Image (cartoon, rainbow, N blue to C red; front, side, top):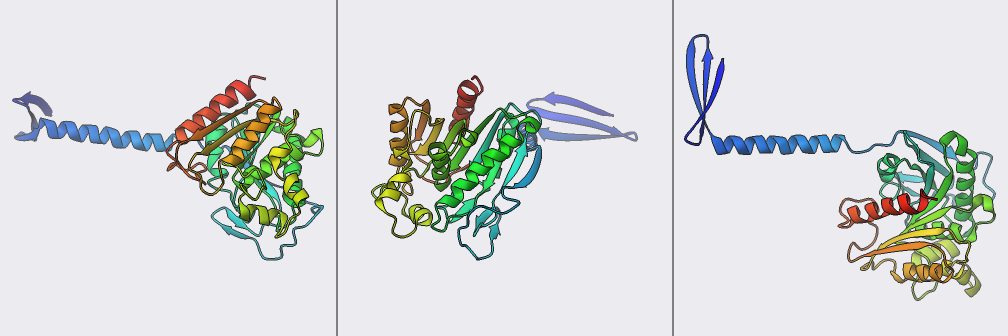
Length: 320
C-alpha cells in the first residue's frame, strides 16, 4: 500500500510492503518539474504522431505510348532522395485524400529546369494538402535541355490525365502549382494552354521565375529552357507576364522580399499584369526567407503562408 502526504513543501510517500515501512522524501518542486517535463515529452510525441499523412498514392505515366517530343537527354536519370536529374520519362505521383473536397493540385517542383526538388517542393506537402481534402499530383516533368516545348507538353498532359480520372477521384477543379523554375512552368501553362481541356482552374506560384527579360530573369533557368542564344521573340514569348489575358486563371503568389536567386520583380510584374487584366489574384511577400524554402519548417513564415493559402483555397477556390 502506498500513502501520499505533503508536509512543509515536501512530498512524503509511505510505502508499506510486506509489513515493512519505508519513507521516501521527494522535493515537491523537483517532482513538479518532472511531471511537467513528462507532459511536454508526451505532448511532443502525440503531436508528431498526429501529423497528417497522405492516404493513397500511385504513379501514373504521362506518355505510356511514347511522348510527342524529346529533349535529347541521353544520360541516365538520377534520383537523389526525390531530387531528380536527367528526367526523360514524365509521370505524376498522385496522393489522394481520404475525404476529397473536389480540388486537385498538380505541383511542378523547381530546380532551374536542371533538377527537380520533388520532395520539399512536392511530396512533403502531401499530408498537409490531403488533410484539407486536396488531391496532390507531383509532376515529374521532362527537363527541357533547351527544348522549350517539352515541359509544357507534360504539364498539359498532366491536366488531361487528372480530368480523365475526375469522376474516380471526385475532382471538379484542377489547379497548377509551381516553385521557382517550376513556377515558370506553372505560369506557362496558365498563359500558354492550348485548349480549354488543358486550362487550369487556378495557379499557385511560390517564388516563381516568370520573366525571360535578361535584366530580371533567372539566367540558368532561361538557358536551360531556351538554349544559349534565344531570340528576342522567344524571350518575349516565355516572359509570362507578357502573356497574361483576361482568361488567365486566378492566382495565389508567395515569395520573400530578400530572395537573391529569383528577383521578386518576377512575381510583382506578373501580379501587376493580372491586376491590369482584372484577373483575381493575391500576393504575399514575406520580409525574409530567401529562396527555395518550399515546405521546410526552417522558413520563418511557414505557418503564415500555409494558413494564408488555406484561407484563399477555402474562400476563393472552394466557394465558387
